[in-house]
Length: 150
Image 1: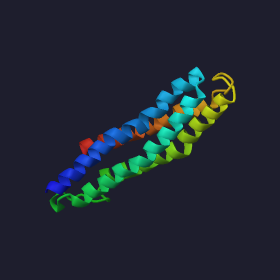
Image 2: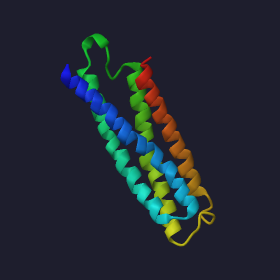
Image 3: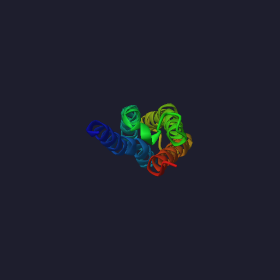
Image 4: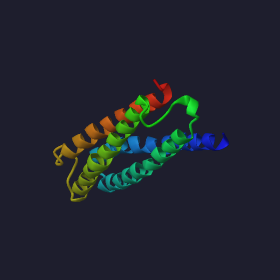
């Protein structure tokens, strides 16, 4: 009984302190892109990568909590809201690692090559804005599913 509570608390704490920055950092980088601060954008790209990879701990604690849930709850990976949450998280993680972080790196490198936000053509900025927005929406959907448990 005690250990399952500890795992759930770790899952929630990790979600707050890891998933939050994973979702918010790319949006804060857009300000640095607009101001032409390539170094800040590259730092944010690294931070976003670290938080995205660290978010795997949230998933690990989630699976631990799921495994320790009382049998009377009837929870498993096949429970619809759990499965949908896993899929949405996996898509959000993939988007962050395969689209957001590369767009941040590209923007940061372009800005360090004495390009300005205007000469970037907006491609990197649009990619960051669109994909990080989708990532955030996916993570909000996961949060709603975790709270509502339909």
